[in-house]
Image (cartoon, rainbow, N blue to C red):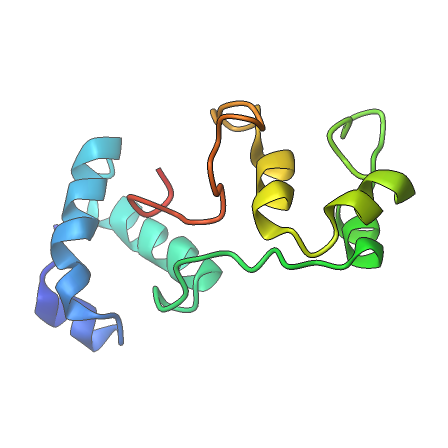
Length: 120
């Protein structure tokens, strides 16, 4: 478990201590090494817990570069689908995360771009 002072020393908002501890308990992140790894990885991915929403406001060329359709990435973008999804972050999030990694399908996901419960 972490406390507010430990988070302060890591330059993380101290008020997040309860949320961190709830997340640790919920997902079985119990050892100090596991907790440190989680804080390091998640902190790296979200600006030390300052950015809580993924920016997916991509133009079509960027969608094609980052998420091209391949045999293993059937959900990826073709030139036509990239043009249809361009600058629509919610639709992009639903497409790239829907039916993957335990997420629901594209239609039912909602915004898909916010990370509730710190990467639930």
